[in-house]
Length: 155
Image (cartoon, rainbow, N blue to C red; front, side, top):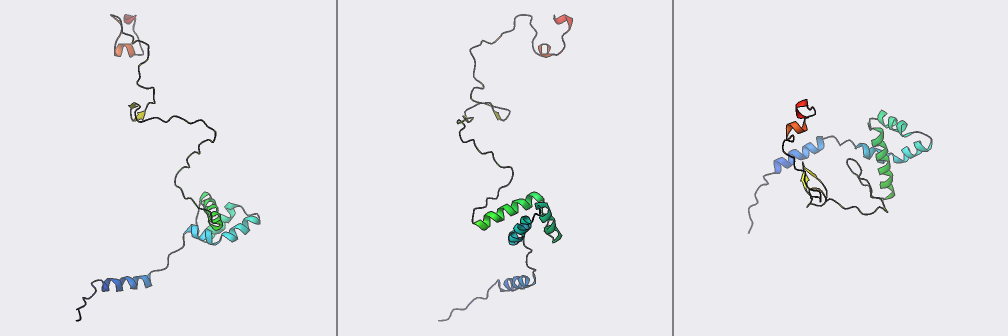
């Protein structure tokens, strides 16, 4: 009627981790969280005439170290977040926006020839109507023809 209950093989591990939770200090808030938390004060300082650099220096005195560009970005994102607008966080350079009335451009297709790892475009590698020039007998060929110096013997 009664099944034997096996002891929990992880009870010792759970107890150890619970002790560590009690001993561990709470995490320091991130710089963005700090800027977001004091956003009303930052807005008031800026309204009183403080520059972004001055406000950033005040934050740095309290241990929040940010570059001026990062500070401005954090303030901008915190304002958007407070308004309920989506905050897009990107890395690297921003991509250029396409011009609104620009004519569509033809993209280089995968069937275009490739030279040295680069696509050459739709007309590369095609023959033209001009015939190839064939050297006449006795004309310079190879290295002699491409040399930057010509001797009197070759004239």
